[in-house]
Length: 178
Image (cartoon, rainbow, N blue to C red):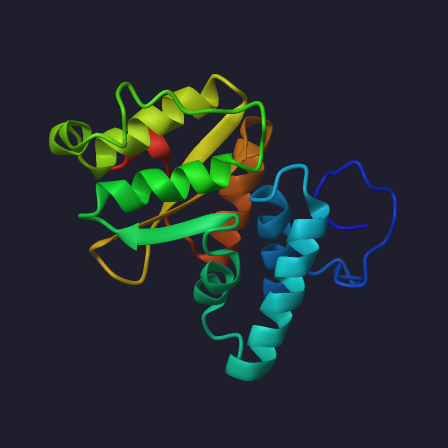
């Protein structure tokens, strides 16, 4: 069984059998966290991650995770593109039929985007998601002018911090984006 405290009683072939912390086991835990309630999605992304490691090596696991999760359970968008940020967050939220973000305005309207910036969008989405038991995270991206993030179940906030630290990911809550 993996170190991740989940509801599954079966061994998985990608769990670390020796109990050692490995990059691969941390990536698996991360994928479980950013795919709340969707182990099948996490498994598909993990298989793609393993393929990417075979092709490109394991030197930059966070980049590979970003690559296999983009617009499915993670996002990276240009920091100046508030429309893309709203679209990316909405795309991730669409995985849950009972969750919708209160943007405090119409994100399809030009005026909305003239009045908000990336940190404000993160904050509004964080607050709305948090009320529904989810946490929006911002992570440091390879490029400075990019917003990147994930959504997890709020009950997994501490586990997310542990996994992010193990993988060397600079992470902050969505309401702390500057």
